[in-house]
Length: 324
Image (cartoon, rainbow, N blue to C red; front, side):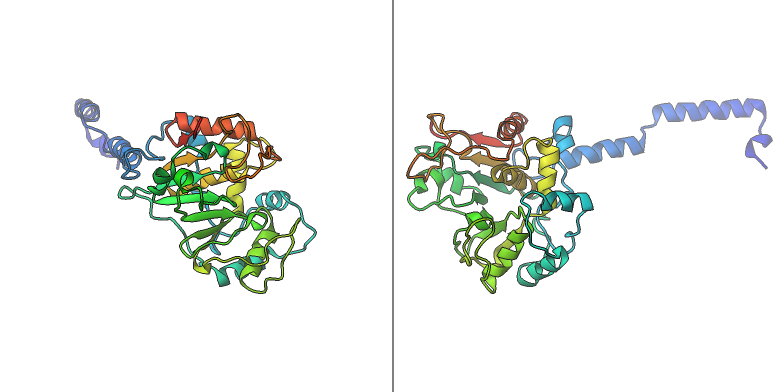
């Protein structure tokens, strides 16, 4: 029997009045809990003075930044959607017929198979320096500032010896691929950016048979590096950067731009050095003996530059422009 059938109209009216007053003047525990919970996540996302995840009320940033996209590959997260795999295989097409799953198994039979940098939280403050290769570093005296960071990521062949005053001497991570490979010391993580599946095979070969000496050009058949410090960028991360951050400008992102986003996914503060033109407006490397002009190639250079400055304006990264 319905409980209201036992009540007189007067009692029902009194009951409804009481319920209305209760709802109007009693705090909503669900809404209050949600608001305070969200605020606590955003305000205490790290222990640095400012955090990349600190202010998530910026629609521009929230649309682009996806913390669930894996930055680094392991066996568990290696499966890709068909469209992602097809896009990645089309970046630098090859005639080699290869089974991706078998290559992944070989990779993680040799190198650490784990989830890296899953320690984000209110007690962590990991600072990151991304060091590019622009000639604007010359005369900058950024060396000691760069070395002060917890993580120092260098890209491709950028050397430190002889340039310590301007670029520092510390290297915790070296981004490379077969065509840009250099020898590393045992304190440095090798982070492979695989733009093709042959790059993964090359990495395996450098630590085993050393039989791969060519991709689309001649490459080093072996390198000095600690196999326990090898990491592989997830191919899906490249597509994520291309679609979400570059909105499909260019054919695929540059190594430098991917590195900045990689840093934003593993660190709480990111400072960027050695990007952009030199003080004379030319585009060349700080270590070049002759001033070779480098063009953007298949990358959306102008849009990448614009996006970097948007990130700086939103206090997500800091860009150090070098000596000018």
